[in-house]
Length: 162
Image (cartoon, rainbow, N blue to C red; front, side, top):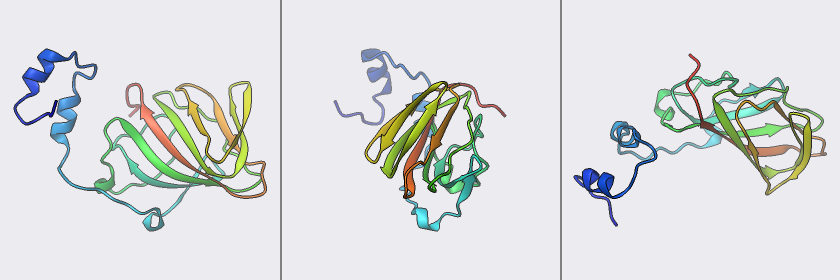
């Protein structure tokens, strides 16, 4: 089925919409292509030891998020709270922290290390993806010899805190 303008009521009658306001979100979005190269972004220090290039974000501040400034044109995300390229130097780790209103996914591009969640710890390497549930104390640790490069994605799960 191809969704065309004017077919929303037909579509709604056919399928139960698990996201009741999803069409409102799409109505608010502008029809434009948004691209951004990480090399054109000023980095921020993340959780006292990481380097974070906040590429895209929502316009709302979320719980436990870093203080990254994002130009309004790149505050285009609605359900995903952010997409960041992150780097962690050898022998450093993020301070333990939690996010009350969003889950995270780390995709490891390069490097090895450990991820701590609560009282559990696991090793990771390039190519791994790590899911971090909301309200979970976590920290990423670089115990390798090279830089750990990863993409961090936040997914909104609750009410914005501010």
